[in-house]
Image (cartoon, rainbow, N blue to C red; front, side, top):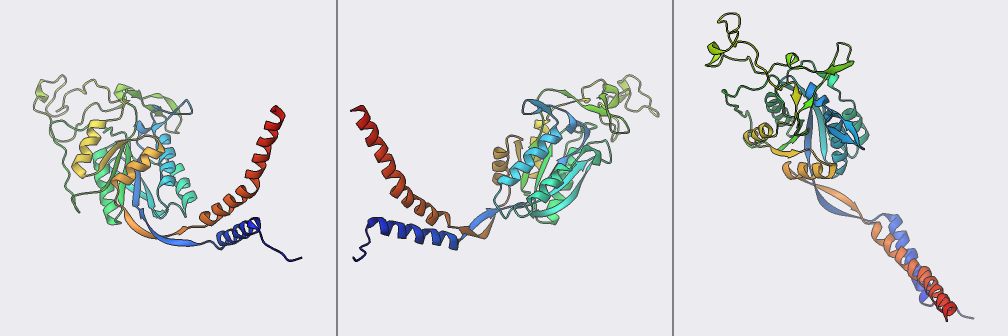
Length: 322
């Protein structure tokens, strides 16, 4: 008796060939946009304010930044490099040079999770100076800058001295300024010398105006003015001990520097904002194609076995109802 292969035989043979092709692992050459970035995180005291939420529980701004930056980095194309830095006082400081976030994701995520407000070396917060310094550091390694901050300057900038930016490199910087925090004024946690939380900052704990530069024109009319001992007069009342995202200030900083601006949102939205404002570089990559023959082999097996079984079940149900 001679063997005569039927359609079922040829279908199984085709499925076997396709499965072997999938195991062989075919690939194709393609280009993918990747980015070279360095992310700076504001670690000043106002970033400890708990006006964010996680699973319905209050979360500090700093913890929210660390969580969403890590998640957004995982959503960027493989081949993207990202470094890490911190900002406090008036300086930005690089902690980690840009590395491939796919190949080194565990190391990058661990570095981000280790960032804490206790790294700060001063209590002031000159955000504008920190952004300018971050751009200088980014240009030195040809990396675009991500800067996460609530924008609160401490002491506040003087309104009679306009903010200016003198780029020491290309005028059009690339990157993203990310606003962190809510719109409503929120208390700032206060800590003792041992790092234990002991309440919230009060008005007397925080400068309510800047005392940098010459006294303002109306200084002589202020209460407590003394030309030698108190040229600015008494410290006025204010709300600098409360914090909210200073969005107009951050938008002005973005305009001055050429950075993009976005409010920090979900990781997907953050990753999209990063991709929209950073410089893409086309990188040749190998794309795995094994899923195509594997999918075809599975489709053949489903057609051979699952489809007839489903048909028999339908006919059995019709026979029972007849």
